[in-house]
Length: 193
Image (tube, rainbow, N blue to C red; front, side):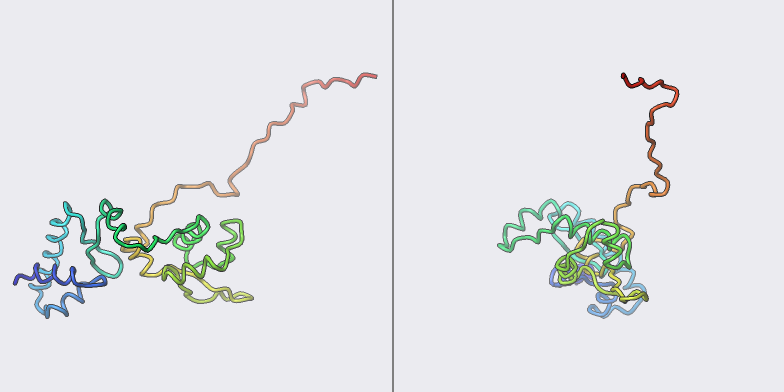
């Protein structure tokens, strides 16, 4: 059996992403020539899968086969489990953590302008999308939140560099609202007596 077929079997049978090291170990790959063939085989499989209902993608924890976005809606009907619905506040909180990490709950509240409910942080931790990296060395020692590898995997990213670029927003200090004041040269009507 060719290495490409063996690799494809691994991807189809695996319940997790596989790194190149995983593949080398599982297939007893030891030579540089075979390592090169592994990489070529993965690229060939990616090309072959482009026109199918599934893709071979690379995420932060390795490579995996997943249903294409076009087929996902049909496949979702197979399971009765309702998809996780995230509130706007939850998505905003997750976005702030992803873009500004490490970040404290107070930082998130400063950015959002409202308090962050405890259940939002709990949900994000329970989903495995964020974790506590440490604690800020200030009074109260607030927890510092960061995103996890599971966050990257669940959102099909290899790294945080794949997050959409935020538009350039003006700095608050640079905003100088112009007020239209009444010109002093305009004569005001004298009160009638």
